[in-house]
Image (cartoon, rainbow, N blue to C red):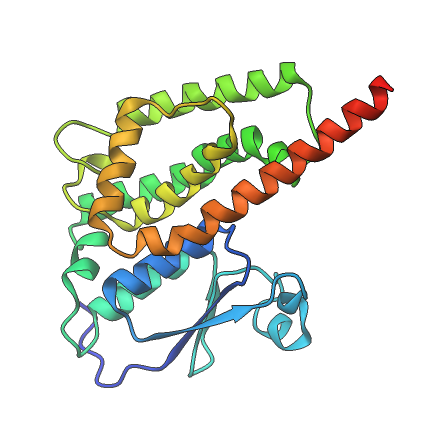
Length: 251
C-alpha cells in the first residue's frame, strides 16, 4: 500500500449524454457498484459540449470518460480511469468496498490477468465488434451483404475464441474469476452492440456470461437501458433509410 489518504479530493467524471457509449458505461458501472463519492457531469452530445473551450482545456483529445480531481489532476481513457479509481479508493482512509477489493485484485498475478483482459478488449475484441456493427448504426457507410456476412463471421470466430480462452469453467467471469472485475465492466457493455445484427446469436457460453453479469451487477440493467433503446433506434433508422433507397432504385 502507498499509505492511507487522510483526505479524499473531490472527483468529477465527465460522460456523454448519449447513452450509446460502452466506455462511459464501464466507468459508470464501477462508480455505481462501488458507491464511490464521484460526481457525474453529463456533457451534451448533440450540442458538442465536449468541444467547448473549457473542456478542451481539461482534455485536448475531447474524449469521455474523463476524470478530474479537485487538485487539478485529470486523466482520460476508460480503462485508465477505472484502474485509477480502484487504486485511489482502495488506498483511502475510508474502508474500501468489497467491489473495489475484488474488481481490481491486489494479487500481482490476478491483476495481470485483469490488465490482459482490458488490453484484449481494447485491441482485439472491441475492433471486431465495431467492424461488424457500425454500418448498421450509421457510424460507417453501408456495406454489401457479402462484406456484412464476412465481418459477422470474423466477429463470431473471435467471440468463440474469447469464450474458449477467457470464459473458463472454474469461474463465471472473464479470466476464470468468480466475481466481476473491471474487465467485465468493460467487455459486457461492448457486447451490447451485437444486438443490432439481425438473426445473430452470441455463443451460448457468452450468453450465460452476460446473464450472470446482469444478475450480479445490480446497476447494469438500469445503466444499460438507454444503450439498448438508442441502438434499436439507430438501427431502425438505418434500415428504413436503406429500404427507401432500394425502393427509389427499383422505381
